[in-house]
Length: 228
Figure 1 (cartoon, one colour):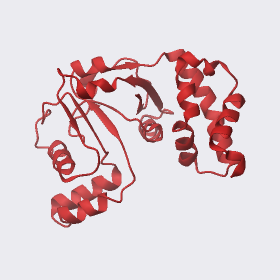
Figure 2: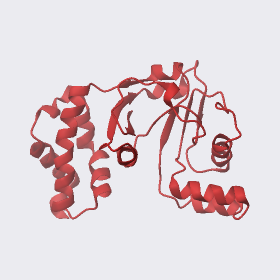
Figure 3: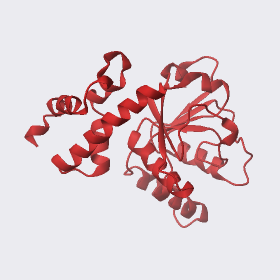
Figure 4: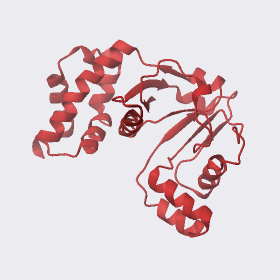
């Protein structure tokens, strides 16, 4: 699975000691399969650190979820169990490591959700009402690699190849925005979720060696954009 990490700088080597405590799934290295989500965090942390922000790309081996030596917890959606787990980890009184899982996957408690968690903890919204709200929340995704042995299941994508893919992707998204009259994140999601991008991301296809307009023509044929 191709996953992404948004930060103020690129990441080639993962250092778990630099992770913040009291996050959704505890201290660890966080990635997502939704590139636009990583881009949002890259821009956000970049502004704070006065940089442009960077999205680092990794290959996550999904057999990690079934690996007999790894303890894994997965939440498929916003559930009561997810809420209880996030509240446990976000509690400032909880220890740095409030659980012993190697890998945790599930939705994100972003700004809107986090604000409602505060309301829930304050008793101004019931758990039932909060979970009802979450049922209508925009899908999000994150994987937290919590332990050193979990890092064996992820590796960075070749840097030069990644840069080539990025240089192709940027003008394609800009073209989608202007030619198809799309919002930035809509255009990004359309491209990154396409089969064309999957082929571009597969180094063996060598599509990253082609001009971006060739890739854009492939995308238009795939999605029948000329009919929009």
